[in-house]
Image 1 (cartoon, helix red, strand yellow):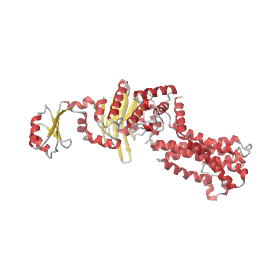
Image 2 (cartoon, chains in turn orange, brown):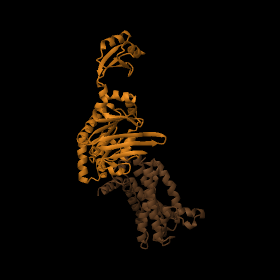
Image 3 (cartoon, each protein chain N blue to C red):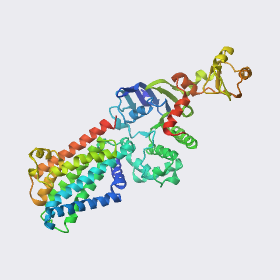
Length: 328
Length: 245
């Protein structure tokens, strides 16, 4: 019972179909109070559909959702005071200023005038938007819009915050600042449910991660547990100026104790259970007219685990998303 | 109290953002003026025709003033996703939609009294039964707003809402007895007249201004009230069915 009380979100057998398409199929997971839970998957995996159902913007076809112990399927409005939502696209009012947008969002949660104005000013300062407080939202840059949308999501200091792809389509500096803000919110006690397709972002921020592919959760665990099986691996990435054809088979025949893969043109990834001796490899490649420009030891990352579990190349996933939402 | 803070702020935002914009205000004044002028010219009986024309102009001003507003206040916000923010607020859908429509009801009612204010300079309105005229004006405004809401939530694009509105508005104007008495319509069209809320509103307005009406005022007002409830309930049902998938 005590353990149950610590759960912020409980999801069991969540299923959703759109016509013939099964968007979610028997999804189960729990989010513990105070944790930063990552929901990682490619486009169309079911991340936004899951968030929509958790927040009451969509109805599941089957399954149970409890937020803070309250059944959200039967009573979706009951939890809305406790949650904050930052959608994947900014949905504030373009004709209102930043300050007016925040005050309006605060009023939706029943905050009095003085309280909401104070909170709006505080958040504008936190998100470095005080200078733009009186400018219309329509005139904001993408990064500023994203920041204000997050500020609007936390205006009522929710216990649980849903963040849907918070850093997609914004510049590197803004994304970095947003990650700092998200981490600070979590450290201050907010439970965060974060969907992202940036694996390194999830690895850096999240306590636990669920991988979702084609509407099914394929793995849920802490980042440490996910990465642990490959931590002992030794990985070297060799870069060649000229792409080589058929080199993988030759390398595997010559170095039977090493695993090789070709992640891109001119790139060779080497994995082993012991330190990799680079000299013989470089000589082998140069004997076959390869122009070896770099050989780097790599730390095995969550990306490797993601590729291993889902079979989806993380770079492909990122490019696909950025084509839709703009580059980070 | 918290829910009413949300209600008031949604209403105030919509008033500022949509309803009290200069084009809307000028439209609210020019539209009744144009209709009044048109019917004066058509009747050819000068200022004497004001009492006959007034109910029609009041009803049409309300109808056009309200139904067109919901397309922006609801359909446009749904399209640009800011409506989702309202759906995430911890208030009931009923209160939320009442807040979204309250501005249109208010503006519609004001629009209805603009022709009355204009007419008061040219005609003696002391014989008007204000006790039924005022509630009828408010109820026509509510029914027209909820008709606009019903249309706004049934479509996805603002232009569709405007087009769909005309599909209801124009037949209603000509069949509801405002400008042509229902008994003078072709027999096959007469039952259709009674399917429109405006018919009952027009009957009360005619009765209040000229003394001639078909149904008792209480029946007209009760049917108009029933239209309001049905249109609002149908709109909420449609929102839950179409927007909360």
